Amino acid sequence: MVNWHSRAGAAALCGAGAARAGRARTVDTVDGVDDANNVDIGTGRAGWAEPVGGPAEPVSDMAERIPDVRALSSGLARAGYLADEPLATALFLAVRMGQPILLEGEPGVGKTEAAKALAAVLDTPLVRLQCYEGIAAAEALYEWNYPRQLLSIRLAEATGGTLHDADLFSEDYLLARPLLAALDHRGPRPAVLLIDEVDRADDEFEAFLFELLAESAVTIPELGTRKAALPPITILTSNRTRDLHDALKRRCLYHWISYPDTGRVAAIIRRRVPATAGHLANQVAESVRSLRGLDLTKPPGVAEAISWATALHVIGVDELTAATAEQTMSAVLKYSEDGDVVRRAGLAAVVGERGRA
Image 1 (cartoon, rainbow, N blue to C red):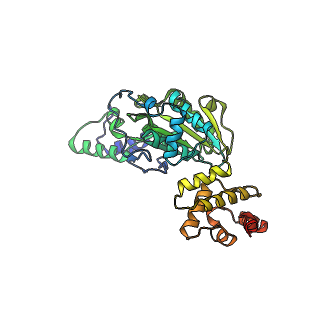
Image 2: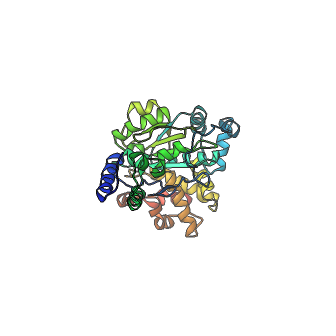
Image 3: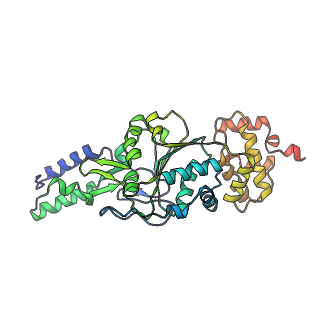
């Protein structure tokens, strides 16, 4: 039993809490809001997983919702994501086998969007953990609500009460971060857990993920092991800036997303920017293919093609020319050096204007 009848007791709590949970830092969920008191589960469906109050019944209509690869592919298309058959098959296996999947590919080919679209198809929350260099387990899993703990201590001091460790380190004071939020989601269908750009994290964080990926469980020292009643559908993405550990890959299905052909890029543009005329979508897709053939620091991907088409629509043009390309180059190129390379190659040649003359 710990007596918290003094300011020294409050200081002890801060020290103990810091030792338990490490640095307090917000984890960027990008699609939602992650502040000191809440993790908002992003796209997929409105609402937030219910608080943990006991094991949930693992009720799911997954087999009826996506009975085969074709059904999933059609659902992804309705959600605005055009997946080829190999990718649709890989995602289908991840859902139906309950196994994590690692999606690798160049930046901008649609790895993150695949997870968002899958959550929409399944009508289930998307929980996103954005990895970065130096991310720690405590930032991705949970932390303790220190202000609330200190208020409880002050209240105990004022009323002459006594607090135990277990009183302060309990569910009431636990703040779920993305990984724990995905495990604690109670259905009716599993959450989609997106661990984005895992290659930006370090080896220690990869090792921390092993238990989560293999067992759909994590260990909280004060509360024990938490195992998911509905294991999340886990999607990891990597831009392959470094090699991931073999032990991580062994726990996952794997799929490499290549840059799509020009026809598919044009179809994606038309789907994502409906106001873009079909002819302009084809021009943008062809021009991006030409840009990717140059020696650029950052070759444009599908995301840049969509951004370029959107920019052209916003300024009110329906024909891609050298002049309109120069106006909107900021939407597709991210380095000034790349702009110089393109201008030396000739914007008219890049956008095919000479061939149309």
